[in-house]
Amino acid sequence: MALSGVAAIGGAALLAPLTHWLEPLAENSFSSRSGAFSLVEVEALERCVGLFRDWRSTGLGRAAVLGQLSDVCERLQQAPPGERTERVFLVAAELAKVAGSMAFDDGAHRAAQLHYVNAARLAKAGGHTSFGAAALAALARQSFDRGAADDGLAIVQLAQRSTRVSATPRLRALLAIREAWAYAQLGDVHRFRSAVDTAEELHIPRVESDE
Image (cartoon, rainbow, N blue to C red):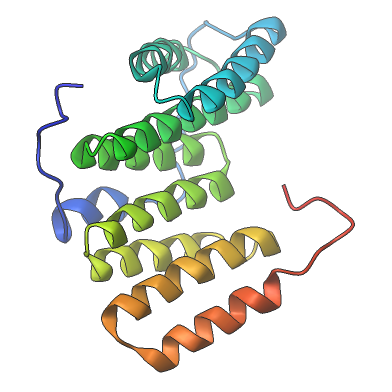
């Protein structure tokens, strides 16, 4: 909350924390100390995230989201590698993204930037690159809202590169739309139309879920 009045940043100051996002994690990214999450804890945290997503629409709960995020991140520092820990990293990433969206809605743009970047990092740490790309898409949208089209485009292209192989059609369509927004603001009509065409081609109803 203290960052609500702090001005947003752009250019290298915004993009630098994301420069290593495409690189593989170091072998010691996970702690070898004890502190594993039980299955009951993981499932409770996942339900908690769903609750906070609903709260976002009411404009309430930002302090609660940040408190839960802080607690989860503290536990993750002592969690061993494994499937449950990876699930909790996704929980943390989702909490950070919800916090970013709440801050964005409140006009606290610098806080929103920090939360979105944190969401991408947490997702990457748990092996959830696609969710990290969705967090970057939210960060790009914020850049467009602020009129920083160059920053937004760079962020979208980073997300596209990181998910070139793994992205679902739905995620690729989302990123293509974000790319189109950038070209619209930059006045590049040809690339805008190309990005829109790509998004339309990908946005085809499917029997299987893209989630």
